[in-house]
Image 1 (cartoon, rainbow, N blue to C red):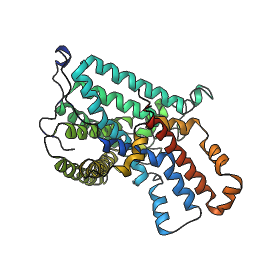
Image 2 (spheres, rainbow, N blue to C red):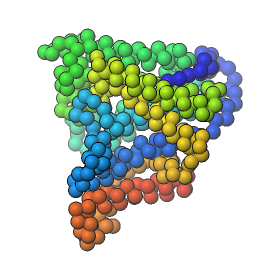
Image 3 (tube, rainbow, N blue to C red):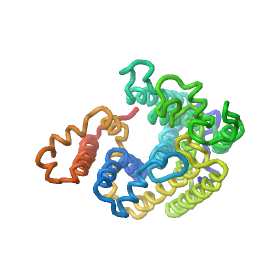
Image 4 (cartoon, one colour):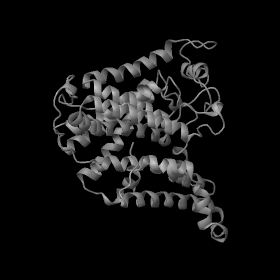
Length: 385
């Protein structure tokens, strides 16, 4: 990601100097909207498309359904970009939040903030997947929220400790090191350089060392070893955040450079994929570059439309979600929204829609999601850790 030479963190003795006032940086509405756009597909839009596909097989619906379905193993579609986009946004956001804390309260406070928030996110992740409901054997130690918590934790610690050069070295080391491990460390019974599901090093590490419940039998798509390159995804977001915050370039130039960097990341990722295939379930280094590149391009487009052209009203519902992503994510896990939707539009209303009854129900669920986050937004209620 593009960065100017001035994109550096506070000096190593920052915590020892007197706190100074943080520079005023307006909140990036485009970042909040992009976060909400990302969550929009998770909290209903994807299910609407899949419900539509049950009764409509037009080319447009087929294309949307294909793009909103995870690839079985190798390859990438739009839905494979949703999770890394969120991790990328976490990296962008922490630049603004942690820089403010570093400048006003010092490094020790920033460290406490990062560690506390990372641990809480991890624990919420365990709770999200059922906690102790079915005993220790069914606890999922590594899941989506757990990965976000770990990425935030380690990326935040790196951000508070190193300047830009150190962060670049850390990111490159994670991606190249992961590739070398996956390519050259032999897996018992299969050898080295095998990227087939269940036969690669990342899956083997989960099988050997990850206890309790694993999503895919003896391994997990958010497993132990693949968390390393996921931290790299978060660092790509950090580089983008540093560029947006510190670069003296004009807004228009920033948007162009961000989009160009995104295109470059996608091309490099596909090129790397010739040796180290693009696989979301083990978060390969090539996948990191492809997903990071698309994430940068998405942000550039939102930045152009919202920050530069000033077209904001269309993004307002996404901002509602983007300011309360964890809240709506947990609500979808803890509340039976489908039951509520059926109480509102079930029976004769649902029957009147015939084959499109499921589309109606999923649309109502999505509408309820927007209603909840709008209610919270109007009352300035935001779940913050």
